[in-house]
Amino acid sequence: MVSPQQIENLQNSFERAVRLGGSPGAVSTSPTQSFMNTLPRRVSMSKQSKALKPFSTGDIKILLLENVNETAINMFKDQGYQVQIYKSSLPEEELIQMIQDVHAIGIRSKTKLTEKVLKHAKNLVAIGCFCIGTNQVDLDYAAKIGVAVFNSPFSNSRSVAELIMAEVVSLARQLGDRSIELHTGTWNKVSARCWEVRGKTLGIIGYGHIGAQLSVLAEAFGMHVLYYDIVTIMALGTAKQVSTLDELLNKADFVTCHVPATPDTKNLLSAPQFAAMKDGSYVLNASRGTVIDIPALVQAIKVGKIAGAALDVYPNEPAKNGAGAYNDELNSWTSELVSLPNVILTPHIGGSTEEAQSAIGIEVGNALSKYINEGTSVGSVNFPEVSLRSLDLDQENTVRVLYIHHNVPGVLKTVTNILSNHNIEKQFSDSTGDIAYLMADISNVNQSDIKDIYDQLHDTEYKISIRLLY
Ligand SMILES: NC(=O)c1ccc[n+]([C@@H]2O[C@H](COP(=O)([O-])OP(=O)(O)OC[C@H]3O[C@@H](n4cnc5c(N)ncnc54)[C@H](O)[C@@H]3O)[C@@H](O)[C@H]2O)c1
Ligand SMILES: O=C(O)CC[C@@H](O)C(=O)O
Image (tube, rainbow, N blue to C red; front, side, top):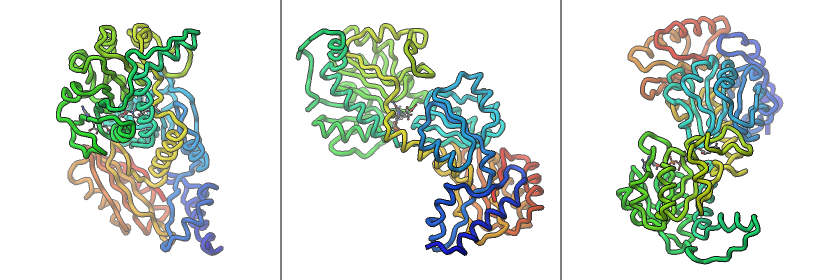
């Protein structure tokens, strides 16, 4: 039960935050309604935590592109952030304009956050990829300018695995072709080269979140599962890891790709790999468009080596939905591909289910909010993962220092010197490559000290960016 006194204490702490407003890098505000709604949960903890809610959240600008789910939109709006929403991605020039003054940007797989684009982001602290893949972001450059990138590593894995299973059955039964024929009035009741999947072998390239999930579903269909991965991974069920890609290609009836887009996976399946596959086998790709050499696949289908394919991803994909968007201008081989029999083409919908999108919205929305409000970088894909336990409610005049810097000797000594007039209650520092991130809670800080601390940290040689939260 929350006592009136407890609530009053909490409100007082926010009023104090409002009074501290105007310090560099952070201004304060009263708590938002959503935050107040969580009061009973927060204050019933045995040791009362002071949730940092340091900014004037009304000043935080978030740009959301590519139809990011409403779970995230609502979360940001509830916190009082200014949220700008677009259903599609933006052309580069427009993106450069829009990114200039936002504090966070949320994207999916289409928006390319290149060095050229990120150079124009003056206030950006975080990027949320509302998906699994992060190859659309220049992660190293983002880290170099102190921008943390978050994603949702497995919220849509099941959706992709289910789609692949559906496609395995559909390819085996030539379902796409039968459906198109009937839509145009042709009755074509055939069984030639239509198969059950029971007893057939599924070859999974990349046995991560999706590959492993798929393995379980395939075995439930009575399939044998082989997988190839660059690391040794424990098999689920009776699946077997093979030691070479060729072994998998030689033995599988269906080959499906679930690897990230990396230089090593570019054209992982090309003419030699199709040649190594069994006659009449099938190819599926719901990973990234660069993983399969599509012109080589077209050839392998034309000569009858490959009996069908299901593709969800392409080297170039349209920026938005619409008729005529998928054409030869986008990828020169489009007309040839669409004219082939038993080829299922989907518009990058592997992770597009209500369940997945809603879960991704919550996960990435939470990660961005925690990073903006508290500096917690846990889950970041390009940044040291740093977190400190919350401040206690009764910790007056405590400031959280977030200091991102180049990972060179002597920096911590300099920073500790600057903070040494105050009590460093706790601190945590970690580094990844050249980027290091220090989080420290310092107490006994008067309002008048804050600007001074900020200025001194700002003048340090190896700083990348600083935020002070209170
Ligand atoms: N179509 C969609 O809508 C959709 C949805 C989600 C994910 N994806 C894509 O699927 C990819 C895989 O997703 P995941 O969640 O399973 O990723 P994951 O990171 O959990 O698993 C990837 C696996 O691939 C392995 N791997 C990496 N390079 C390899 C190589 N050269 N050869 C063999 N194995 C290699 C890794 O060791 C890892 O086990 C993502 O990177 C993303 O690009 C697409
Ligand atoms: O939703 C998207 O745009 C991307 C889905 C998928 O490719 C992912 O990486 O999670």
